[in-house]
Length: 81
View (cartoon, rainbow, N blue to C red):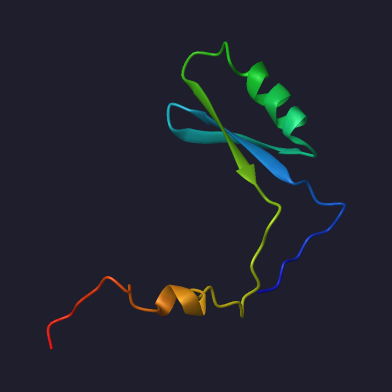
């Protein structure tokens, strides 16, 4: 798995929805910035905020597969023979 991250890129984004419709997105450098942005919208009727983590991105060729130990059968499992 490849993790791509740049120092210049924001790590969080606040998505602001009005009655379920996305109205704006605000990029943030820290959790405190995101909390401040969300707090600014608290008093507005019909507005909901969602904080999205942009810190981890997967490359196009990445395969998200289980670890080998996750593929092992449960020792308690007794299948029909």
